[in-house]
Each structure stands twice: as structure tokens, then as C-alpha cells.
Length: 307
Image 1 (tube, helix red, strand yellow):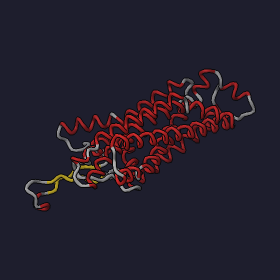
Image 2 (cartoon, helix red, strand yellow):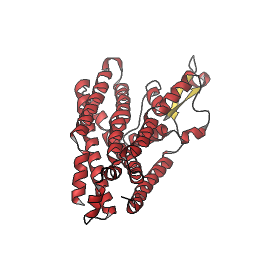
Image 3 (spheres, helix red, strand yellow):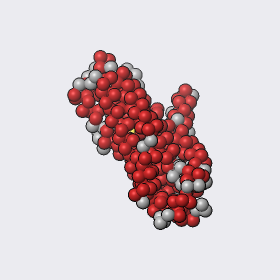
Image 4 (cartoon, helix red, strand yellow):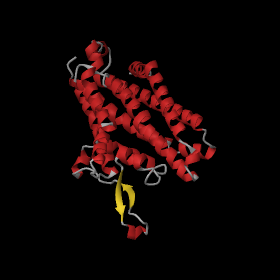
């Protein structure tokens, strides 16, 4: 099994994957750094919250989003299907290795490599945003405080996406057949629901016409999981105008109009509240159960797979 773990780890830590996460870290850090303008932010708290929101979005959509998801599904979808397609699975089975030990070794090597790549991307990201943002020590400390949350969310992404891609890899005989559904899922998390919400916004419609749509909005699911991770380190905070970005892109906040008689303002005031249509505990249980089910099913399938 040690040989299988080492080989899978080497395949995961290919030079192309390393370069990809480094470039993503530099690009994301650059965007955060140049968009955090202290002169326009006002108070320290307002400035820090503004920088943090940009940092949160960069991590969710790029560092632990598109880049990490692509790497995970690219490796995991070929764990078994790639070996079957190339015919190398027969060489592995012919050696004194059980099929389940082969799969276990591949999973351990893949998970270890993906975690290393995630940590590398986050490290480069922080160093780059600190360089271009030229933050003082207090701002740096405030932004760095959320990196444990990003690591936790990255582990959730790695665990779920790798489990589903591994299951598909055990079901099909070609990597591309496992890869395509995973790419579609990634698009559903990072793009499609956002586009739908933008269209609804321009049509002057607040939220979904039915609460049931939240059940299929995986962008909202993962946005809620991301917010839960951030809440462990202080939460996603800011003024209503600052929170418009995460509200639109993640759907984790909903707007309400407060009557001016209650706010004593000339005009009605719009407030953003946490969107708890689906409690985060339910999401953790459901996606945790799916992850375990996917892995257990993969071990059942590999023992019966025709190679």
C-alpha cells in the first residue's frame, strides 16, 4: 500500500498542479491587495471588514473554489477509471494487494496531496495580498485570523468532491465519464445559481419564488457551509452595502425593508439578515452522510468491478 500511496501522492503533486495553485494564489492575492483602499474606507473596523469580504470571495470562488475543485475532481475521477482505461489496474490487482487496499492507498495519497496543494495556495495567497495591500500589522492579523476557517472549508470541499469523484471513478471505465458530471457540479456551485439570482434581481424579484428551490441551490449550500466556517473565526461582518456582494454571490443573506417609523430615518432602510432557510446543521449532516456513503459505496464497487 505504501507504494500506491507514494505513487498517487506524486501524481497529485505534479508540477502543473503546483504551478496552478501558485498562480491562483498570486492572482487572488493581487486582486484583494489592490482593491483594499484604506483612504476610502473610513474607520479601521469598516476597512478591515471591506478587505475581509473581498478576501472571503477570493477564497470561496478561486483558491478553495475553482482551482481546488478542479484539482480534486481531476485526480479523484481517475483513481480507478484511469487505471481501468489504461489497463494498469490489472497489474495492481495481480500483485499481492486486495482491491480495497489499492483503493484505500489511492484515496490516502490523493487526499494528502490535495491538502498540501490547498495549504500552498492559501499561503501564497496571503503573502501576495499582504505585499500588494501593504497592510499594517493589525489588518494583517485580522485577515490571517480567518485562515483556519478557510482550511476547514477546504477540507470540506476536498472530502465531498473527492468522495463523489471516487464513486464515479469506480462506476465508469473512462476518466472523462466521471469528470464531466463533477465539472457540471462545480459550475452549479460557482456560477449557475449566481446568474439566476442576478436575473431575478434585474426583474425586481426578491429571492426565489419558492423556498423549495433552496434545496437544489448547491451554491447556497456551500455558501452556508463557508459562512459557518467563517463564523467560527468571527463571522462575515460589515455594513449592508458591504454585505451586498456575499448576499448576491452566496445567497447567505436576505434583505428586508425596515419601516422608517421604526428607524426614524427619512427613507425606508434596507437591512441584511442571515438566510437560514436551510439550517447549517442540516447541511453538515447531509453532506457528511453523502461523503461517507460515497466512500463506502466505492469500496463495495471496487470489489465487484470488472477489470
